Every structure is written in C-alpha cells, then in structure tokens.
Image (cartoon, rainbow, N blue to C red; front, side, top):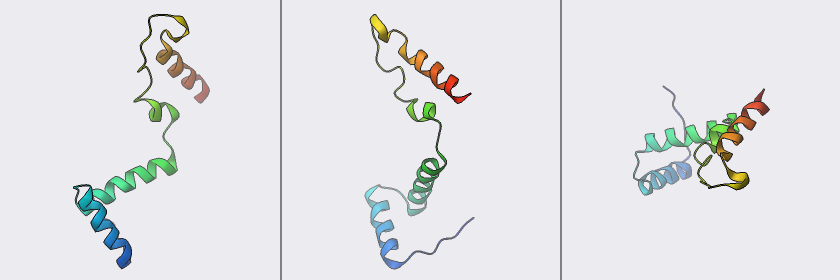
Length: 79
C-alpha cells in the first residue's frame, strides 16, 4: 500500500473529478495511474491499435484481410 500527500488545490481537484466521473477517489487514482503507467512504459503498437485493427470489412481490392496483414507487419517489425 502506498500513501500520497496532496496539496489542498490538487485534493480539491481530485474530489471534484472523482465525483464528476461517478468514481471513488481511490478508483479514480488507480485508473489515472494505470493510464499514466501505460503512457510512460508504452504498450506495444499492436496492443494500442487492437481495438481498431480489422474493423473495416471489404469485399475486395487491396483492403482484403488488411487486419491480418497489419498484425503480421507489426510482429515482423518487433523482431
């Protein structure tokens, strides 16, 4: 368990932001830390783009199986 000291201004912002998000202050802080750690440590490009890879469906042309091709290209690039 960690503890953090906040100045009164930041504590007030935390209270308002948590209330506006309908979250407890602890949950709000955990969420903020998760997001910031991911930002600093960097998820792989494939992980960050996973929600959108392969969304577009096509019946032909160069876009056929583009999601699969993009994933393969990312895997090759990581090596």
